[in-house]
Amino acid sequence: MTAPSHPPETAPRQAWMGLLARATPARLAGLFPDLPAHDFLRAPEVGAVMVRGRIGGVGQPFNLGEMTLTRCSLRLAGGVAGGVVGHAHVQGRDKAHATRAAVIDALMQTGAADGLRVAVLAPLAADETARRAARAAKAAATRVEFFTLVRGEDQ
Amino acid sequence: MYVAVKGGERAIDNAHAWQAEERRGDPAVAELALAQIREQLALAVNRVMAEGSLYDPDLAALAIKQARGDLIEAIFLIRAYRTTLPRLGASRPVATAQMAVIRRISATFKDLPGGQVLGPTFDYTHRLLDFKLAAEGAPVPVAATAPASLADVPHVMAFLNRDGLIEAEPAGDASPPDLTREPMELPASRALRLQAITRGDEGFILALAYSTQRGYGRTHAFVGELRIGCVAVELDIPELGFPVEIGEVELSECETVNQFTGSKTEPPQFTRGYGLVFGQSERKAISMSLVDRSLRWKELGEDCTGAPAQDEEFVLMHADNIQATGFLEHIKLPHYVDFQSELELVRKLRAEVLAAQEAAQ
Image (tube, rainbow over all chains, first blue to last red; front, side, top):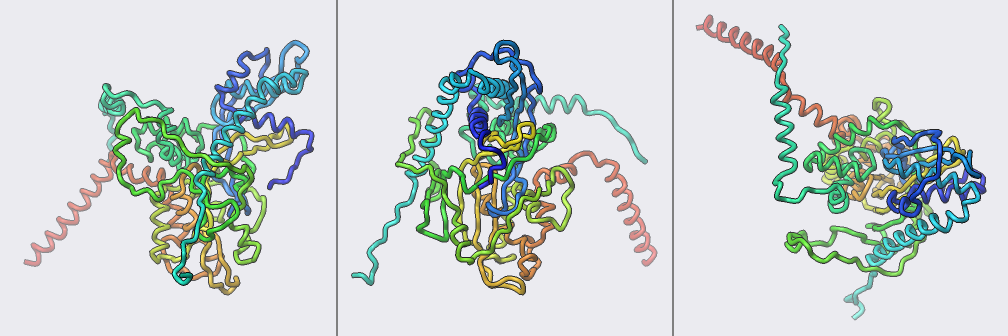
């Protein structure tokens, strides 16, 4: 629907940032409990984003209402990854969620990426796929199968 | 004469303490957890999010608990809270054509790509009280499943649009007006009207929509499509230079197809009404699309019959239940001085009338 206004090389980062944002805070904390040293560039901040829709689903934008959002920017401290910056914008008001997502965003730009892909991103993606598939399967079971009764004039 | 009075602090404190005790109810009954409200009273949570105009199920659950289930009071709490939040941006318009639908029905086409999907619905129930729910500890219900496709479900309107039978929806990306940022000005654009209606009181919007069905500004609506499901919310991040998904919201969307015999400016074709609401709120979404269509009489060159649902000022200035309850409920607060002046005026008028009557005898 929306035309990509960004180079394709950002797609992997967009994918992991979205995955981290959609994860439940508890699940993310379970997969990645210990945070490496970091310094905040922007401490976790709770705010609101105005969610927009389109008139008729396809037309001019209009303001639908707000949603809560927590954002955070930080820089990894020390070690080989020191200095790498990570960002997070996550739905809700959980500052620990935003911090953890920003740390993982930074680490995903370092040599730790492959390990994190296996240990964190893959399980999150699997959870999400399973959750979506479960809802789609329940919806599919409520799909109406019409059948035509024998009509009077056919007899 | 203005008399400043003070007092009532102790009475107010004690009233609030009693309210807290009443909120808890009988201590022998287990306290309600927010997660229980969020999970088991989800449609109340949805209404509070829609009319509170803030999507956050945990906050809405808290508001419902604090308000003792008074949903307008809960909406008030959410509206007050949202004013404390810094605005961190506006999302890209959500793509409802890519909604992960759990419900999708059309009253205009029986057979359509993607099919008629009922989803979790009260439709076709007999509205008989289910006393089995009165007993706790029943086994957890399990929904049936069937093989599913995760492909996007196309909008029904797109099919009609192909034949030119329905009015085209002008596309664009202009930044829409925001009634939470600047006072609403009339006449309002359709974008502004939709914002006001989607956060408006469900009962009021329902009543207006019903009035159009009964003949007060008739618009002959069919539900072309009603869909409910989750959509991704994307936000452009300036420091990154690209958009990221920040989460998902569940929405109810309704598109109506309306009879239209043509006017001075438009050929005979179907016209559209649109409703989009936070959460599973299909009554509100359908109502919204009827009221939206009704308010479009001027741009479509229709006659105004003076019906309330055609009167933009009447609709938009009375749809907000927090504004309404604020003004309504303020009259219960002390008006001793105002009333004193009324009392004096009535006494004076009575004295004059009585004196005139006596003089006439």
